[in-house]
Length: 111
Image (cartoon, rainbow, N blue to C red):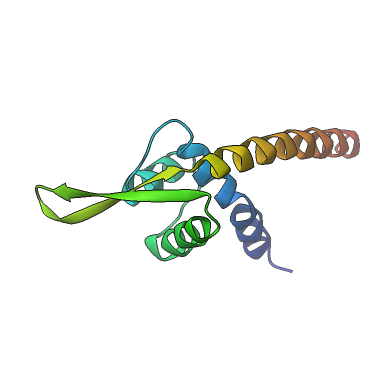
């Protein structure tokens, strides 16, 4: 089993949660979302982000608006829907419980 594959799978499992969290307080253009993820050391490329955004939009957790850009084509700005806000709260609660459980287990086994 390769460590790199396991790390990649762990990151993929939390990307949707991270994207929704980024959009919790304000709308964002995809490159801004990528920058936020990269600054947190979650390296993501556009080819990974766009399918996730589409899946979240199709699940009615996100919506978007178009804005004209002074330096190119119009841009899509994504934002949470009301359903997305509720879903994010549920994910946050689940993450907190999972984080607590994993920390408890890993601290007990790393002695």
